[in-house]
Amino acid sequence: MVVQELPSIVGLVRPGMLSLSQFGGLDLVDDPEEIGIKGAIDLLNVDIDRRGRIRSRDGYNNFLSSAASQRLNSLGVYYNVTGTKQLLASSVDAGANSFLAAYTTAGASIASTVTFNNLAQAQFTRFGGPAAEIVYVASWRVVGTSANSVRTWDGAAWAVAGGFPANTFALDVQALDNRLVAATIASNSSRIAFSDAGAPGTWTATSVLDLTPGDGERIVDIVSWRELVFVFKETKFFVFTGNSAGATGLPIFNYRPVAAGVGSIARGCSIATPTGVYFLSRRGIYRTTGGDPTLISRALDPIFRGGLSSFFSGSELNDAAVSVCQLWWHDERLYFAYPSGSSTTNDRLAVYDPQVDMWLLWNIATNGMTTFRASDGEELFFSYATGTNDIGRHSPSFTDDDGTSISSYYQTGWFEQDGRGRRLNEDTYLRGVTVRGSGSPTIALLTDYNTSDSLAAVVTLGTNPLLARALHNPSYKGKLFSTKISSTSPWSISGIKIGQYP
Image (cartoon, rainbow, N blue to C red; front, top):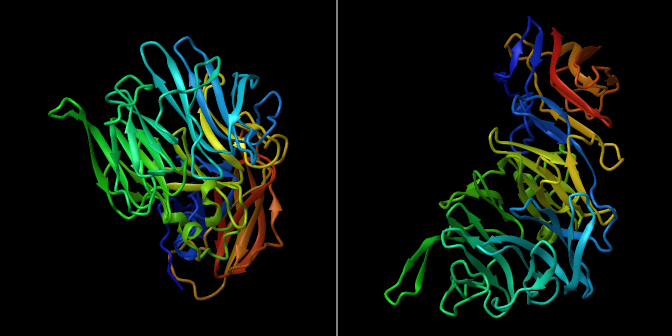
């Protein structure tokens, strides 16, 4: 049996009592006994702040005034200097009538176009110049190997963008020269092109590059971060550092390859953030600032590579449906939507906080995500992967999911300490669990790998935002223990004390 050293977040209140005042994120890699009470071996729909206090997650509500006629997938935003704020969306349809739409901050439709064909994930790229503020939209088709024509939105109408390279499916902006960077699909899937500086409609034939053609991989995505541009293939990426003038006066596009064996595997699964560029590979989620990438999803390794613990109630990523995965950055956190088990739509949302290196897991089913200022503050908006053809607005204002209760739970690892710092060779008796918080969660104390607790009980705490203490005091006997908190209504907990005696 592993002798567990109590982490710093656990203190001895008095002999025979443990105090848990900080909760940790999901850990599917380490031994459940080594995790102890410093982390979770299973959780769903909880949120943990940076002080370690835990609660049920916020909910969401429908945003659109009326649901769209087709399921929406990708989202974007349009802002201009006059204060206009609009939410943009694309639909996905098996026929030839997919559309783009623009909505007001109240969720009312402004204008839409139905000229897209078999639309897959779309990319909304904002571009500003002296004369206009435009959003460009590029996408490929669900079937075939060609892309749709690039579209534009100027705040009032959709239009076809002229002059773009044929079969452009990905776009971003090179900030140093204010150029658009385009990737194409079909005849040359390793080629990128640069528009003229400040002229997104002008594409010079010499401003193109082929990136390791013939390697059996196509360009998957383009991401701009600070002064750099990242171009992703599946097992490598290229970092463009800026342009210089050649002897003939033509620009030279300077770049370096990063052949570390990992790259982005799906459209919409690379994202620029204040802390770097995150991307989804076959091995998990990585972060780079232009050099060798760092794996940041180690705690979730079994979701990507298999071998889930029997204590975890979730499922692995469905590799066969990886093309629907999405990454987004909102409020200093990374959001990863993915299909689990046999699902072909995103039914799980993994949330990563890089400041405390912590993962959470929610059951919000989302196709695409964006950050939108519908009012004064920024909120996470997402298109529904199941249910109505609507857009969700995730906010602390909502305590359920569009009228559906949120089922949440959190289970610690297994601990065997009796509060005196000695190894246990005999059963320990635990008596009394004191909880401080709000709401009415169910408190269970599981023993010796059991999955249920016949003595579990609902404790009545304070009414948010007021906190109160409650005591759950039956007796438990065992060598290993795990605490589980669960509820279908909102709750928060700032601390738990567990009484013990030999």
